[in-house]
Image (spheres, helix red, strand yellow):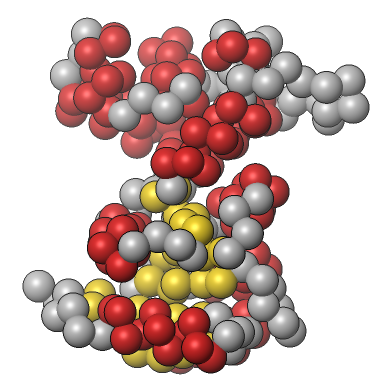
Length: 226
């Protein structure tokens, strides 16, 4: 198989070099460049066309969130895996909203990093389990505060089955669990998810979870919203 082309973006030279040393020996990867800030990451990605950008969130000149948003606009096939020392919920949500396919804390193991890069290359989402659990708890299962903005309406053309699949995705179920819950084949669930993501205009499960919260589909305790 053709090696996955990777661009590493981090403003700390030691961290950047460490990531390259971790990834380079793996024949499945080719590190094609290094960037010290978000603006440099965008420019290098434009020239080098990496498959995956490993992107630090907090960087000078242009931060990782804005750089991710720009890459999603100009290079939609380039996947971004966001990394941060600070696994704050707002960073996770901001990165995923900007178009990142994944978010990992920097204390993950080399094996977890490599597996995440392989996953996001396929277009699937990767969020560290501790972050995804907290994200679902905070942004999906917590009752909306009085100051919370009005929900964004869900697309009107969703079928009842697509809506139910969306609800189950938002509560953290994978395809096999959804298939078992709804008594459907795995291929049928995948077809529903493909159609659902197109109608929601989201790239992956992580963005679908955020959209479910924002639409009010899932409320306190995982119950459906309006």
